[in-house]
Image (tube, rainbow over all chains, first blue to last red; front, side):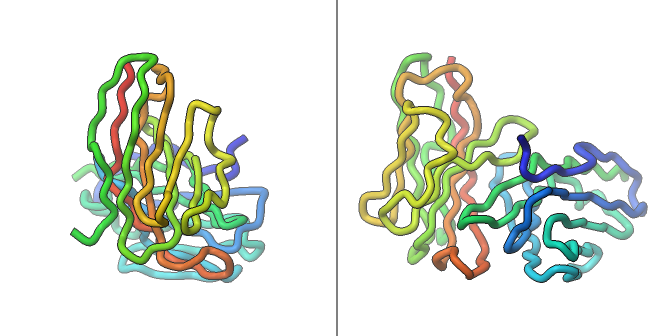
Length: 109
Length: 117
């Protein structure tokens, strides 16, 4: 059973379009993190959200934590080819960081 | 460098052999994680150390897998009688503070790609 479900698994869109990636769970997390992973590299943290309903912005990326702290979304505005990569959500629970399977994003120039 | 260092970067071994994977965390980081990542998947939790002790080893798939961190710094993941299904990238991460009640960033190494032939 996957604790964190990410959707979609794959997304290929044109440069300039907007997109949203979802991370859902039936469990409550004390925090939720979004990472980005490039091929051959380890994941790199983008943001941590802690409070239910919290919204954080990182340039063209907007992260939201659900009110019940069970789900999160990542919205990218005006996607660019440099946004291509594997986006992972991870929940903090019982002193562990549990990852979703990831969304593989490909932005076409 | 000041980041998490994992060695070797690549390891090819024959089925049935024993392997050791090393992780050198960022200096001063008390928490250390091991994850396993299969192609196209997210990292799968294996074990978490707080200092020298394994705080949670519930992710280790079976008793062929074992990890140690004897001095609270470098950690070694040991796999006995390797099987082809063990082939994956093994990632190590460390973080600065004890996890409980503190939300901190986990820094990952580049991983060790293990191939069992």
